[in-house]
Image 1 (cartoon, rainbow, N blue to C red):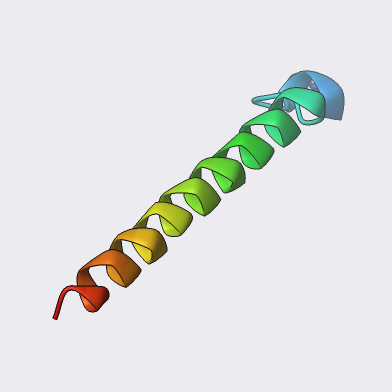
Image 2: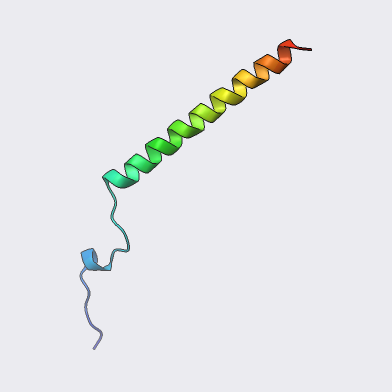
Length: 48
């Protein structure tokens, strides 16, 4: 007979606060990069 493993023990990783922090930081970095590209685009558009 197969050994029964509880659902909590079978999980491969934890969810919660650390995952949320990574997602929020990633979104913030993406927004900063987008802002930088927008500013750069406006600067080079004004030169032409």
